[in-house]
Amino acid sequence: MSAAVMASLLAALGAPLASLLAGYGSAMLGGILFVLVGGFLFGIIAGAAPILLLVL
Image (cartoon, rainbow, N blue to C red):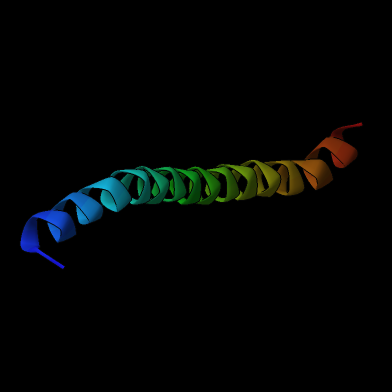
């Protein structure tokens, strides 16, 4: 296989692979942010619940 064929094959495979990795990375980042924000909100709610119960 010649170098030109290899280069074009790598370019053809590389573009979808790069977009797939970018999508996977952004999805992972979104998931981590979601877990962090969700845990933060849950902590606030769990911490405020006894106080709210005492007030009510």
